[in-house]
Length: 401
Ligand code: PLP
Image (tube, rainbow, N blue to C red):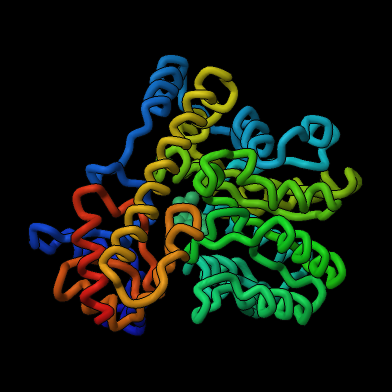
């Protein structure tokens, strides 16, 4: 008898399951709006030219494959935290802000969450309703035991449920960790305005809540990395202590290289040594040392003004295409007289759109038109191209009749 006999099968992860059945579908005009990755107007993955250039430099300058330090490549973590928080050199030098290289954004969340559970004795975490589906799993696996949600999406108005959001934060117990999407909220594509962020900060300060920013899409909301960092920098300016995860999967197209950074912001240098020693123990016990290639590539770009400029231009091109597709989808739907209002498609930012389509509509679109999207009605705007946009708009129109 097998020792594995009592293992129960976990339910499949929706996005990967859909990708698999999409790849097996041989319908000629099938459309994949599920993936969380950028696609070109030809529907292809994008190997960013400046990334290719930087990788060549990395390979040429690599002399060995020795371990990186447990905290990773310093030139990378410093530049990454600066990209996030602006001019923080002095705080980095004194030690009250520091980064830990991580296994992309997911790994940063995982290390940060374990730190908060183990060393700040946090038990409750809040995530937006809805959120990226992995937040729950990562935090529970990290030692949290009380998962709570704050209201975020107003289904009826297809906009931010501000009152619900603020009320839920106001009722959160002290020391709760609040996961906040820095920009380009996944899955709704809706970000708070600056005034709303100010209110969020005010409530969090008063309630003594701990912000954990998840920044997986810097540059993907507005096309401008500085603008997209506004929320996190505002919290910094208000004297918060917080954690922030960064992913370089999307904005560098380095999905499989797992380049990420976890920034710690402390309000004093007194405990830095202890904090760092405990982070060291978490990383050591989980994966020991981070991988080199992705981080070195990102570092090469961030630390070279010419390459950085080229990367910033590329971000503008990618977000420009996303904005064009949002506009085209809305225009198409409005011209077709599709039932409902479609302004939310262009009001939202980033890669994703919460369309407002129901699970029944989603199933109808998949069965009849071979258009794939998440059951929640979330689509990846990058899956739209000039070739398939009319087809998708007509199919949505039909689904809503
Ligand atoms: N956070 C959010 C909101 C995301 O959407 C993602 C990826 O889809 C991540 C974090 C982490 O991604 P990765 O681990 O690939 O960097």
